[in-house]
Amino acid sequence: MSLDPGPHAGQLRVAAVQATPAYLDRETTLDVVVDHITNAGADGAHLVVFPESFVPGYPDWVWRQKPFSDASWYARFEDQAVEVSGPSLDKVCRAAEAAGVWVALGITERSSSGALYNAVVYINDEGGIAGLHRKLVPTGAERLVWANGQGPMLTVIDIGGVRVGSLICWESYMPLARAALYQKGIDILLVPTWDNSDEWVPTLRHTAKEGQVFVVGVTTYLRGCDVPRDLPGADDIYGGAEDFMSKGNTIIVAPGGEILEGPLTGTAGVVTATLDLDRIAAGRRAFDPTGHYARPDILQLTIHSSTDQRIGRARRV
Image (cartoon, rainbow, N blue to C red):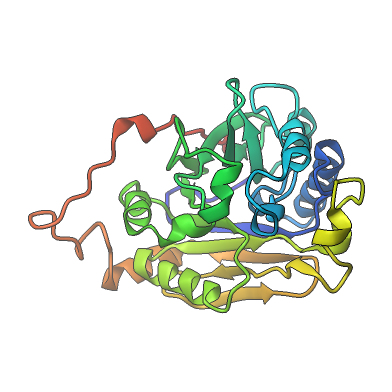
């Protein structure tokens, strides 16, 4: 990948993948991931972004079943989760290296203790794991399957001088989480999500203006007919092609809030945009939330060091 030197110089092309996973099937879904990485690389992308818990799929059933009546569903979910330190992601790493792209992949991560985390794993253009962000607090019924984030959180990676961070879904409604990433100097905020609401796009536009950052929101396209029917009670819980679990809401927003591409709804697809990185500095001339428009003599944010993670760096070519 080639970027002009300097944190706010040049362009970066992003591909936001609104795809359908092979639900609760890790290996087949990873094949979908590999195909999209390959295609995005051929299209000139520098960064490919996937939705929340794309592998092995978002646990939508927690919103449709009585709590703790889902033993078989959870067992398959846990079995098909991703062990970041194991071989699960090997083929994704190879695909990223072959395509020469960075990847931000939404996963359900299975830890060594057995706890499951809603996470984004970053893979660099040399095929290495460059970082991990775990969702700080699962939302509502999500707490039946995911633990509060521990260890690597609010991670920022460096892609050729461009600083990238993630907030997963409703983490974006946590003002201090947003402020923490602004304070860490992000240029691009990735927001993998499950939110299909009318309010979601204005949320991302507000964030882009508040932080003077590019925002990439990426959502799954998933219907009831995509749920395996061998799961107990699947026919009672889910309908067919008209039973939308997620219609999608993928969008790319510029600093200041202008929509560059999207939102894409009602179909699978890929939303792409070439980001003009000079727009970041131009926007911050008027409003820099952690610079000249801050008042550290009145307001300060403390970020505890336990949330920090080493920043991965891409090679420049």
